[in-house]
Amino acid sequence: MITHRVGEILGLKRNWEKFKFDVSWAFFQSKPTEKQNLWIRVPEEMQKVEGKAQFRRLLREVPGTKGAPRAFFETIRDWLVKELKFTQSKVDRCLFHRFADGIGKMFVSLHVDDGQGRGEKEWVDWFEEELRKRFDIKGEGFTHVKLGETSEFCGVEWTEDKSGTI
Image (cartoon, rainbow, N blue to C red; front, top):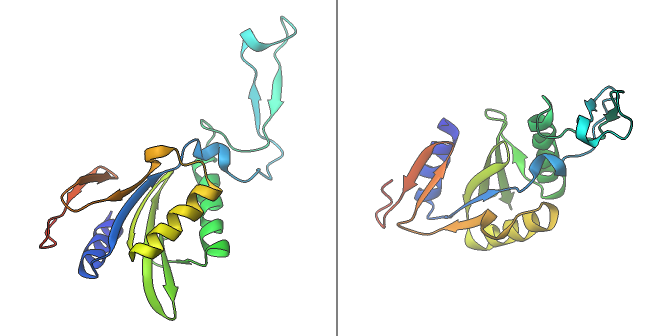
């Protein structure tokens, strides 16, 4: 939570645009798992042979499995770092920075399948476009938060005014 607050303050100081996003069906968009021992029991009403329990091996973590949040985090982390050239913070592993010519241009902070950040307008627009190409982001799933609007992330509501007060 401290990371989000510090990011907000730094973004306000630089007069960066604020954004937030929610990835739809995030866990289903994770990379396939390497686990060989990930099985589910088929519900009785869906079984083809009565009286015998049927099981299916999962090819990826899905909601309800212990590894689903981590699998999605690893998927989005690898995409941010390897493809979009973000740098992962060494202090808070959920914080990612994007630099160009040695100057910070934007940051993204993640919490499960939600994210928020701030950046220069053209970088935020670029990030939204790339995010929508890679992940299923429905309509309002990516929001540019405007001055005076209240936004919520990780249970904390933020409203900023022209003076930069939160």
